[in-house]
Image (tube, rainbow over all chains, first blue to last red; front, side, top):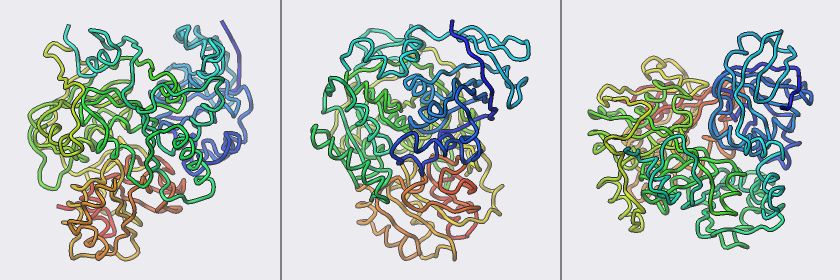
Length: 163
Length: 414
């Protein structure tokens, strides 16, 4: 199984899609144009400080709110390797997978970590932080295939070239 | 084993005799609704496909409602992309007709259908006995190209409604109360089904308002049984016929069941910045407001305007307060015009606007500035949702919003 490590950014509960990508920037032409404004209502400095390979750790109901796909897209565009949260809102979960953004569910690690910590993620097995292993469940193979391809559209192109 | 309404609709759409919560089925979609929030992204992705095709253009309904009329060259460009594509491909297209979910309820949704909408509030269609669910533009594209998608059959939370709402208490107070009770992710991935003797006291307007807000509890969809009120609404709106009228079987399995006595519901508000941050209006009575908003797919229907007009008739909007009145659709606007309701608002000093999403989604019209307070019948009160990131949104009923516009502070109407 795939493994990687990264520095974490810690966010709270109910991080909604308006926080992830505020409405006023949705009409910008490209995701790269939107990137500086990600999470700006909550933490205006965050988008500028996130480095490729970083990881977000958040609480419950991450991604609640609208169906805007710019939310998972912009997180991916920031270079976030994966999001770890206690739970996800349904539409965001589907949109994230469809855009090739790895989501991991775990509701214990939040109590132990602080921002800037390094963690090690063993996809489908466990997360390692400060010598402690936090088990995570594995995603079904078809979702892993979509993630591996970088999203649903790319997965379908890879699969049969029809769409 | 018995099935819930959600299970029956998925089974019908999948062409299988039985579906149960937790199953994943490939379903044939009845409609695919998309609006100007994300359709330009769908068009871009579609154009990047090697062999693009549309499975059935008659199932697509595209509605411009988020920025109407356009407010910037950027939104004009994204809407032009949507408009040009719709014309080229013969896709049903509306602009200026109203908020997408209200337009869908008035013209398309039929009981028993399974509908994808590229908008989270697609769960509104449960008021008409249809399984509506919000998706992103990638899932939308997949449905548009193949006519199908996959769905995880949701578990159902059942709400048995008894009693009757007191005078001045609305369906919106009821659903906000329920969201406060179960929490902003209390129904995550689940269907919320409403049944019970009180259903006959709830109009179609009430029902649409209740189902619309279920996504704020995380629900995948909301569902109600078809009855005389549903059939009468369908008859009055183009004489549509149901695909199927389902009720949950007596031995169907529910994840949880709640009994809610409507006579115990009081006027409530969702305080900043979470929809489940519920308090009685009476506890917020000293909060001064800068703006009041009556409209949206949740509460911009004729009954809401009637209730508001009853409260504000012959009175004035408080000095320095903006009161935005935005009928949810052309049909609602025209009916309100004929009934003389729009006059009442204009004479009171309100700003009456064309049907659109308005400040509910924090763009286009009426956005609020730093430190300002909005009392709103919109759908969300997230931080920054209605404008500046340091502003405050209180969600409340049409009655509370109107009374607050008059008083200049959050006020219970009756």
